[in-house]
Image (tube, rainbow, N blue to C red):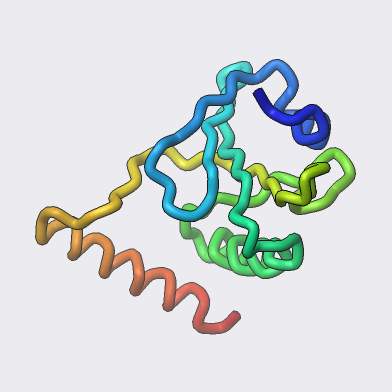
Length: 128
């Protein structure tokens, strides 16, 4: 169950199903679904504060403008890029991109695909 202040911060959360996604190394991550739509909700590690989100917003909007699929931050009802819970932890919601997360490369084809993605990323941000 989400803290009430977190559920109230985003219009996407009330009435949604919120399921933990295991395997994260840094942040606590959840899959949010409501009415056929999906998002990612994260409670960030304590080392991250709200100012980080201005950088994320700039980079991901730049990537999206250059045609790369990237999760985008979903603003709170108040228009903020994240919110701070009563316990001081930072939370954010991002758009969902269908696919799978690879934690360990097990085949050469995966390494090749990762290298190609890294190259596309660097080309896209070269003028940022």
